[in-house]
Image 1 (cartoon, rainbow, N blue to C red):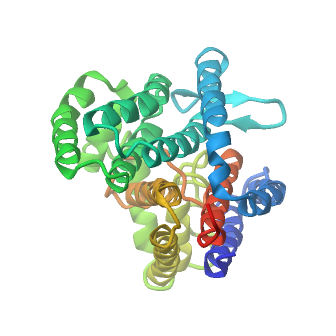
Image 2: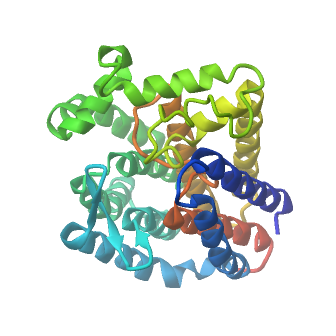
Image 3: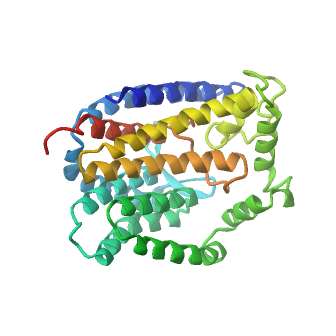
Length: 356
């Protein structure tokens, strides 16, 4: 085991339970208990996958990718609609978001493809990568889940960079993508998604409407001051109901922690996350082969993008996209995918010097 990574992971999971309880203690439903149950259920999976040689991904990547595509297709027809997007499957005692499984399956499949096709012409490799990502990406866009669509972009670019795609092709793709952004924003977004962009650019334009959540998040974090208002403060904006109660334990968990623990608490949390990502990059650098390196980079970029977007939207650095904070935010299916990701990283570390 990479014990520093394991220790940070467990510490942040414990902190997440505390943060979720802090955000929802005034409500009837015990979200912290639900999160703890999910963690307990998923931990055996974490240890089992950690001890399996990651090179076995060649046998599981394609079936998992196909299963994720089928899940996305099912979501289009029988999915549950939440917050304007049909992105959840109701499985009785639990709900599951197939888009989260699709991106980890996409990382596995891309890693397998890029690690075995170095002799293939670059343009053909790019087309194949586009096909692998394109099918699930389009179905997620139809839902529409803008946050999950955004995550695919840095993950794909990072993996293609590590996968020996020439830099000139990556720069060309980036330029074309940036040129298409205005068209996508104008023609491809739903009205509520477009309002998120305009609100991000000018929250004060509608402070009592679309700009309410980000304005209250900024006020909450700012009011925490140096050391915060303390645990379960009765005069916190969260306790008084100014933060959105339906998603405060998901999207705006950092706002609650910033208000309760102030600048010091925020810096400690961000420092722990930075250290976590440095360890993850170290695993990528020390990987035994291209497959392990690609897997580690894809997973690191996936979790980093989630972290950057989640923290950014609470302090008006990025638009509100609904992406949870890894290990800290509430969400059963996301806990499962996150622990699966860390298990794969542990496997890459454990088998970094084993024979192929």
